Image (cartoon, rainbow, N blue to C red):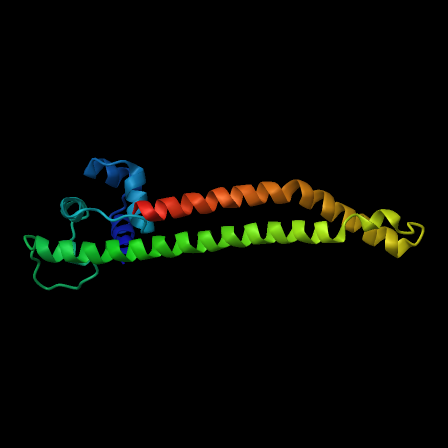
Amino acid sequence: MLNENIKAMRRSKGLSQEELAVKLNVVRQTVSKWERGLSVPDSDMLIALSEALEAPVSTLLGETVTASEPDDLKAIIEKLEVINLQLSRRKSARRQALLWMLIAICAAALLCLGVLVSLGSAYQGWDWSDPETAVFGTAFHVFEWVSVRLAPIMFIGSAIGIVIVLVKKKGQ
């Protein structure tokens, strides 16, 4: 909500992200992060933002207000806390999805290696003069060749990714 309001008001004033950033003494990437909902401005920056966009803070936060109260920082801080909590939950959900995806990649790599180990290299004793056997054998050989070379890399990379995600999760 805040991110959409910042973007809409900036555009309605005909300002680029760079021009708004210059008015606020921040880098353009900061304005971009606000507009994409990746971060929120603190209460002081929110007031400066409302002045730069010539709109009350409450309008930026999504309220339709008849009387503006710019001195009511407590209400602004509470709304920013709610927005930060929503961003934190979204980030946590993304991290959890990444963790499960990496676990799935590890499991798939182990499964591929397990299938290859259990099947052995039986295709070497096949009758390659049969066209169907030749096609299947070639496809199986390609699968084996790719899996033997890529599965360990996928497994190690995913395992490292899992460790990184878990370490970052503990650090919060």
